[in-house]
Image 1 (cartoon, helix red, strand yellow):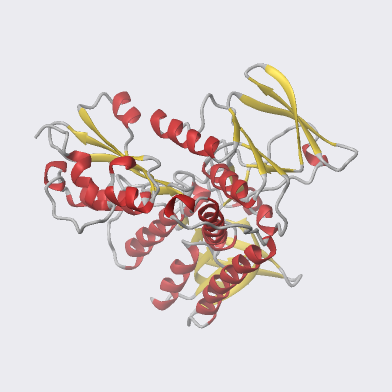
Image 2 (cartoon, rainbow, N blue to C red):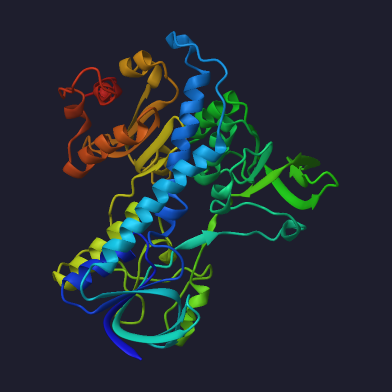
Length: 461
């Protein structure tokens, strides 16, 4: 048995910086990773998908540059090159993170899968085949989440794709069927549509993007339809089977009527589940909820003193930046004696479709449910000078403001540079800058953010 001051399980976007900072603070630390350094973000999420989004955007621009006076003929998708570029960027990030860990003093990197054998004791099945036992007073769980695999008849008999395995494709699918229309499904759907796949999406709910306002969902639906993507709402998949020609036949129910869809590939995108089962948390007494998410307080500590959970495995917003913020809260509280909590922290996020959706704060629908006295500001991107000049006027800006205090309560921007524009409004929210000040701010011309003047102009003083 090897004794440490701190053990971090999982080398994701919370685990890596936390382990390094603890070691640099003089704590003898170990970080345990069963797969790759960097977690989902670097290996299966943000980094690889955004490289593919960039390739898909280039294809879209090649096909739609005519109105700008640039006529492109005969372009083709080299999926092997698309994948090669992605792999190189991922490897650079992954190995950069690993080298940073390896050169950090007081920090041991252990590749293997950890399970609890006692309250603060772990048995690690090393990737080399051996077993190592480690113990520490502080243990931090950052094991993340993985694709939810539903119980559907025949699913085990087909070679379905997840958001991880789809990144191994080096050929464009002829017909990609996506089960689910969440943020992951929307990004991959548009991406492969632009690569040349026929794309069909199945959504169980009555509309896509059920967590967004209806006008956002409707606008995004129209954008996807314009690009030739078929979306069925109120749809459920009941069975899969292989055909004699090697295709996949899906039995689906759409608006109560049974139908069949024949495709070449199936992507599952209905959600994710925490990677907590393999930890044997019952051996240490750490409590989880009915879905397996580790329960924590607002300082990210579990019910067992000295054991913390960070990132996706604890539930809540499943974003890289939230995981990273988890690390900063835990580290500063333990090492710098801060008194930080997760209460009321902002949760900005982006869906990296094209145009992208940037969101922060409450939505219009949430404001109505809370019966808040609000005003809604809305500006079509067709009224944004820079959008017109760039030839992309899809989407709109939207903000929810407090009618009494004039503070911004939330914002959603579906449009080119949507995430960047949203971030400007988030900074205003952080600083308490009211909408009446923003509409008379001097912004550089011509920028997208300049149109925040016009977004708030119609609201009464």
